[in-house]
Length: 253
Image (cartoon, rainbow, N blue to C red; front, side):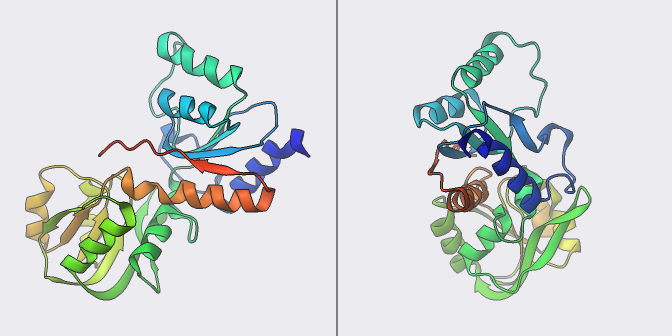
């Protein structure tokens, strides 16, 4: 099986993540972005595909790199300089790259949003935050103080969240969309939440949160999006009997 393992893993990922069905930004290029000889003996998972994380994957002796943010958000051509170095390292080290952006965000079990909700103790999740043709986040009814929710976020992500205290001290309708959804506070409020958890947002959202009566937690784009690749790698490891490792390369953003 080893020479066919990459194809089997890719097929499985595409099926469970509904890769061809979930809409996304053009630059996401979800699915297998770079193939190798077909062999997978060790999986590495990380948030961002970059020259640095490719080097980390090679050092970890991985031949499949799972990422949330892939290689093609901006044009890579021409293949010179650092782009050539990246291409050379991938080819010389037989390293395949599989990327999943919104399909991984939206997955009801393995996704960033579902995993973060579980880590926060939120239950009875409902679909939330329509984007690119589907809901990608989740919302829940709860009764949690802002201070307690901040503490839970810090424990889950390892990062102290930034609070925009636009709403009440008691959080009762909580929406979660990991990553960079901070510019969409109006959409979150329109969908009926009084507390919105995401990764990052712009300066002007502080005043908007006050105007909307909305609590907003910015818990870190990177920090909120480590969950999905870890969960995906773990399930692939179990199914295909392949070891995996997480490559932590935080941006601080």
